[in-house]
Image (cartoon, rainbow, N blue to C red; front, side, top):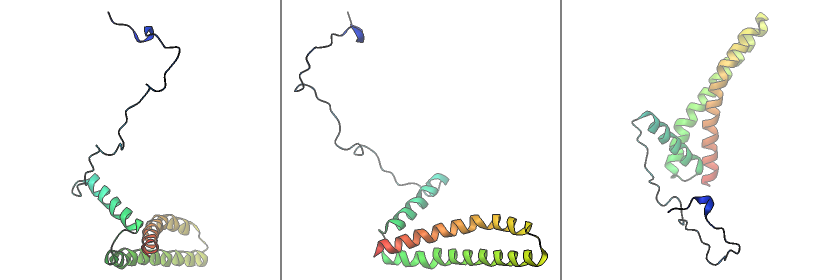
Length: 132
């Protein structure tokens, strides 16, 4: 005959020497760390995230940092310069023609480009200062 859980007798005095719990030392020991597959879409995103995380942490060789500045950095500076040039042209045309509608639309279209290139430059800047 089995007892229900609420029928178990609860001891009045608990001996703390006999109480114990069993826990593994490290919960990540049994976790299988797999490298993402860059050929499927989610794996590609994970691979890019891992690469940018390693770049921002400063744990990379000097040639990787220089290559990052020469590719990602130059492209980001070019995009920022181009967006600034387009914004100044739109402001100049708006002042001449007295129409601010085009400036607002141009500004809304340039914000995502500026944010993305700014984020890439911040990652490279952080990697450079952590490398020292």
